[in-house]
Length: 482
Image 1 (cartoon, helix red, strand yellow):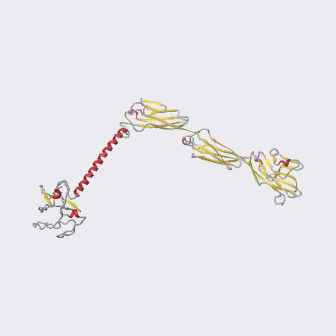
Image 2 (cartoon, one colour):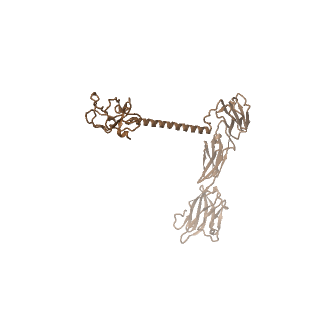
Image 3 (spheres, one colour):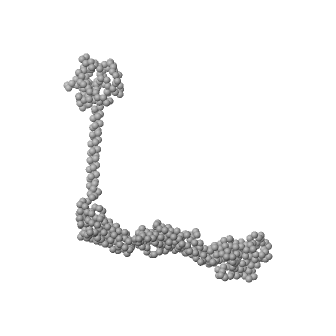
């Protein structure tokens, strides 16, 4: 029957076509004739479903065009030449209007020719049904119970879709959801998903979004949860520092509730509220100074249409405030800072002066002679008090008195042995090896961890260029005449 393999004549059609319910779709059918062409006797469109053929439309050169029920009002030939008195039947494409789910089937376009016989081809028509999507809250008002039971708070439905939809949820809420699919008699599918959670104060005003994916389309719908709950009570105002004579303290009963709190009730455990208390809405105002009568446990009961919750605070009164230092006036802080800076500066100056004095004193002691006191050469001074020391030239051969053999040689300082006559001096230890070292009277000097104590020797001979002083010391003539 098929003309697709016969050379010269063939029927050209699309293999598949699709459309949505209520839309329009074209089913193409074209006949490729031979040269010379064969004669077309009739063209017949048939619906093929479950092994059964059903005529849809017929085009006959002698009898004209005919569309059979139930397609008569919805199917027509697209090419006007088919409907002419002398029709042209090479293009017999039909148009479906107001597509129905029942239109889904395979459709055959068959050409009857003479003398070649019949030629035909087939197209598969798929009909989609766009679902209707809706999201609803289970109840307009969700109540958070003390038992903390799970409940369905919202439902998302994608109804009568073909093919079926996919439903997901998007939210910050910690809950779970389920899915249920129902097949309908007309071939569509209804998908239903419910979101389940434990209602609480934290879930109030949270957004819950249902996402429906149908083929390549994405449909979203959102709701804001309205969760009613009992008051969550907190008392503010006591800072732990209520002391005697403090003025105008107060306590405020704050309650987070949905719906809002309508009644606030205050009481004092094991007693009645103080006489100087004024109650205004949710606040206790204590007039005048703080006294010991204000101490105790204050309780606030907050009530809304869901229930009543209680908050409490323990108030104690002290003799003195706990935070005197932190509350020091700014002027006192500034004065303290200035005084502290001045004292610190003075201490720094004293420390610097002391350090300078010690350094100068050390330098003065380690220098060859103290300019503030008289110095002696082995018992005889050679400089004026307060003047700069001028050392006499060092004779290469020292003369010693004959009455002391132990003192004929100068003491060797910093060396490892002794020798007579001329002596070579180490440049680095020059100051230590010179025989004219000076010391204060009765004072010892320390060099290289060794302490040398100088004893007074008999007065040496006064050189020609030296001048004797009244106190027994000598200085050079050059220094004297300066």
